[in-house]
Image 1 (cartoon, helix red, strand yellow):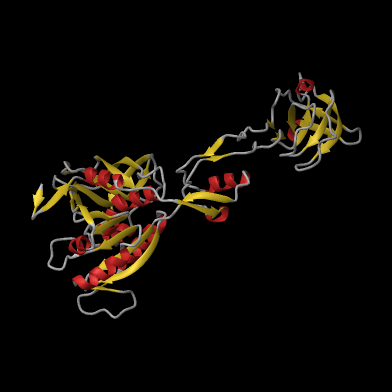
Image 2 (cartoon, rainbow, N blue to C red):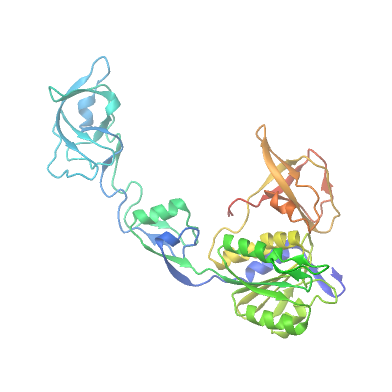
Length: 416
């Protein structure tokens, strides 16, 4: 399909072609305190057992499990108390003999001779006689956490490509690893284009609008492990645009907004080509975001996104986001998708994939979705109020209220 010398490609073709062009970044070592949200560069193997020693899972008494045979509240078993072990305390000189028990705290090491722990709620203690009455029959090993039960020495604990969240950073701390190998964050240059764009804080001339896209993109880039660098606004002249794009092409990725359609002052493709970039995608069968360009110069990837704010966000979510994640070493690139019951009639023309801004909720255990109102590509509020995108396929002509539609959860983490 061609229009005015522009080649249209399907959404799936564009997605695949972009990701095939992406290479992972290099290694960076970061302190554990700065590792949250980063992507592991290599497997992490434990050098220790966790827990390091057999220890108690309960506050109670360590004993021989066989001494509790037949114990009930009506027929308790009496044992002699012969010591106490605190968590982190010395236990080397403590041994549990038959018909005896040692008071033990949660996390304290299991003394020699013991093979079970009776919780405090299942004993009655007679401090004056130094005895306990056991009210429950135990199984061998009950309420004991054994060395290496969580992690064994030599075991691969975290694999390359894992995103480090709260649990993973805690796990690294338990392994006593303070310097973490992660993928470098991609350096991303941002350029806005057009004489109609004015910086925040500047006086607006007639016909101008604020440069919202630069802030939207900067926030999204940070969210997906990139380092944003705002280059500026490229005016509608070849010389000004070439100067800014030349600076931007020194980064790992360039994202520009505006100037990618068919207008007289849509100069981005020409500027990039003059600077030695190869453009491999120009127009994609999708709405919003049809005039998306993608290319590269050497190792620098280039995205030219539409200037309308919603088109910028949707094309970022669908194409730039997974590319950034792959560059930063992530294994999981796709947003969760599920079927929802549409609470609206939705109409579209066949021939392109359409993304509507939606809000999903759970009603009586079922997922329902409605649009966030007017869907114009300049209505950024429709994205602010959305928690999903309603995805209507290229061959779809829409749906009726009550039909099931595919939704993409934009505020949820990526999955395989």
